[in-house]
Amino acid sequence: SSIPVRFTDKAKTLIILTPAIPEDHPQLVYFREKNFRVMKRAEVLGYITRQNKGICIAGTHGKTSTSTITAHLLYQSKVDCNAFLGGISNNYNTNLLLSKESNLVVIEADEYDRSFHHLTPYMAVITSADADHLDIYHTHEAVKQSYEHFASLVRPGGAIIVRKGIDIHPVLQKGVKAYTYSMDEGGDFHAANIRIKPGEIRFDFVTPTETIADVRMGVPVKINIENSVAAMALAWLNGVTSDELRTGLSSFSGVYRRFNILYQSPKMVFIDDYAHHPSELAAGISSIREMYPRRKITGIFQPHLYTRTRDFADDFATVLSTLDEVILLDIYPARELPIEGVSSQMLLDRMGDVKKELCSKAELIPLLAVREGMEVVVT
Image (cartoon, one colour):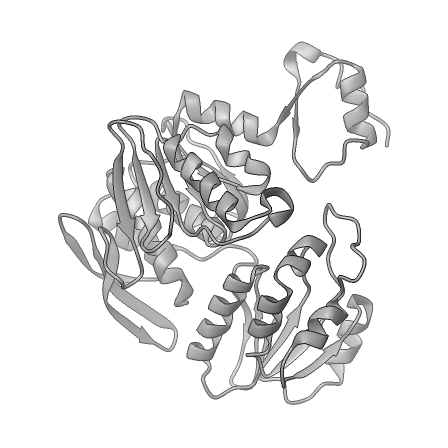
């Protein structure tokens, strides 16, 4: 496409590149030929963390929700913050929050292509370190080593909070405090006295020095308890008060495409979720089972990336087989080219004794329009 005339002053224009943009993209080629300054998004975020106090959340899964909860807890409190998030916050209808006064910056730390190694966190959370992006890392051990390096980047005077049980052993800089957290498995920060009722979850938030009783979740989904504990730990360490924590968590309204309950009636529930890793799928399906224990669950799944589908085919097949019915769409390639032999049919063939079928995206709506007996549908 044509380039707007206003892109003429190289001294005042910075071009920010993400991994989703191919090297032969015509606009990128134009900017490079004209000698504009081009930087990776990760490099820009790294610069921001060196000029401010970066609150960086990393993890194979859980980082988008945890980042967004953290940002909301800080933003609605007297502490305030800026935020660069990986999903659209339902509270603010944006993934960008800006503050006129706060020097705290919440950043979702992306492990793809080792992007998070550009960051210099003031505080950091690691939610998980499961194998993923094996097109980059090749082995799970390399994934864990990458998270260990990320943790070692936390600057003196800061803190690292790691999900209890994650098998990583980082060498931290002198003066960095280390904490653990979990949902209900102990650690420096965890939830106690969890009460789950239809449409409501409450718990007591346990910190190293106090317990904040009777916290209510604005998004009452069990998988978010653990994310909330991590976010509240970051907020608490940065001076958010107990009353502000209660108000913030109860007013949090979720992240677009992260376990969004879009429709709910006595006969039908429709949930939209971005889960694209076997562990995420398992956690989501488990939460749905707890919320709707006597209802049939139909999952409509579009695999994300050929490499991820290839690397975790057996895990995907096992997890998807726990649904009552599965409709598989074609693989979404994103930045990748097809890999011979890797397809949704391959997943279907490996799945167990469950009602299953393939469907193109174009045929999906007509298929569902005549389908009966769907009680809970999750895409």
